[in-house]
Image (cartoon, rainbow, N blue to C red; front, side):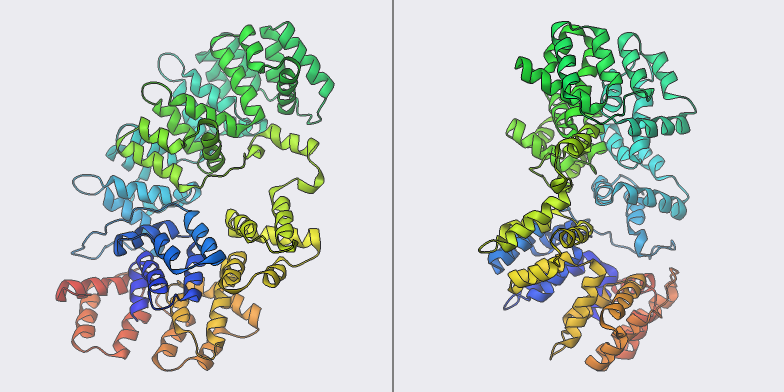
Length: 628
């Protein structure tokens, strides 16, 4: 009952306490530690880490490091280190229960509303909520905020925040293509165009991306992007942008090395605006990359030298951006970020736009490239050049993702095409490369556990399922079986857990807990009491498919007494699913459970009532008796 009540009130705190119990009791409870850490690794682990530190005054990582060892320890620490640590929100004390009809999925909308309500704005809460959600989740959040409060979330934030911080928050709430369109329109407003923004956005995109951008621009502003470019720019710069937007670039992805050499010679020996314009606006991206490579090979100098001889100003900057972006978008954005932070202060608008627009694409690769090129981290430079809440939001964007040592060259259209022409079929995609590395690590003399850990952790759970499929295709072997035969102990259990789809993993843990000689009630209680109705229905369905039996029947045969009754009622799905709160009922039930506590009363209050009603009763109890 305690687990269930806490999981209803604060799931993050519940899992933080569960992890602490797993590592701090006499002998680490490895099964519970693995289950909790793996099951939350792609959900709310950043918030759990922050809450853990707040509650116990120590990092979760330190406790795991002190209580585990070997490859098992390495794997757990890599799971923990893969995500940043979120600063926990200090919950407000409530004198009354929230009167809106909300459910557990509305928590973020409610937090944002409270953060902007009354005197002063709680910027830390706004940062926490916005960063924790992905861009697609923020679109759902905006819609739900409108439904709950009949107010537009972006408009509310715009009125409550200011300066660069406001710009960054509002940018994060806009879908990526729409954000680019808004930035382009803003760049052409007022006296004179912001050529840097025009260059960064238009010159870095593929033909398909520019097509999407033009459609979005027209949808929002009821005008063609090309028309606005014509009005706000001039000369060669205008011609470059218009030709890029025209969609007439050569789409032939075949590499012609002889033509690349000829064009490299022409640019070097007779540099002119016309030669540059033809190459950079008409030829394919793969050809531009090949010309740049040929130029360097022939003359031992970057093609930028010849570009600067034949152009100047905005046109020169556009050509330089095109050649850099066509070769490697990762390098292009890395160098652009460094340029923005040179000198006195950062160019905040451009800094915001790049970090926001790349935050869910190739920011890990950009961070890694930045470190290698400049011998210090992107985070250090941003921290040095910014301040206040604006600094906080940018650092949280950077900290949300890891840092990879691999250049994600596939993000540029030309690199994709280069892969098709120059890489063998064997290593076309990363999944195939990972499958090969895993096979090598498992079948050499002595298993290479570090490689196994590195590959499994670097992939998401969804990517691991693709990896299993690719492994089967390449070697006609089941990857899970190979891992089982080569690994052992808690390390094996953790790796296999990471390789299993989440709902299937939950079902497997429940089955194992029920089939032990002594049923593991801690796993049963944690797995069942922390789930909502939809999650339980999904687990029940997978459980039946995997074990050809109903979860309820196994609970009946393997448990007894009040625990069995509690679990069966939760699994049955008969709990009230409404969101309505009855404050009078909450007060009556709080008095009943305090004055005449009984199992029947607890079960009726905690299991029969909807989540909001349970929380209302808990708050009423605290208000009346000043205790949980």
